[in-house]
Length: 135
Image (cartoon, rainbow, N blue to C red):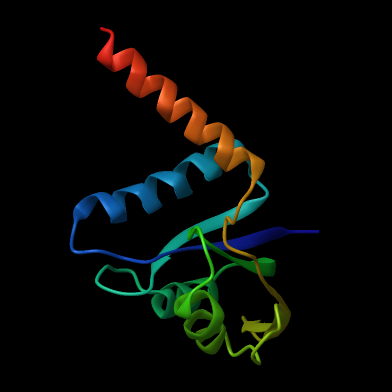
């Protein structure tokens, strides 16, 4: 099986840090695996947009596209806007994506949610803050 495409979706912001965070995270993921062609895309205020990156994926040689939102919780973007852009019927997480004259599976991942890894990260951030205070 060939590579999979991963569209890492960020919200977008007027503040440059948001775009940098999404792009840096995409780079970290790319450094951890060669299983994916990874592209970051944004819902608003930043480029490239989700739509622009979907078009860019149409030129890639991938066997599947997984859309991964870098959002903590479900909201309008997660439940309505992104599925609409992807052409997914409401409440579904699987569809198809056309590229290079073929159709490949499209999968829409969940937001981060209350994952134990998030709790570990918050404990690390608390420890870092305490260490800063004591240094």
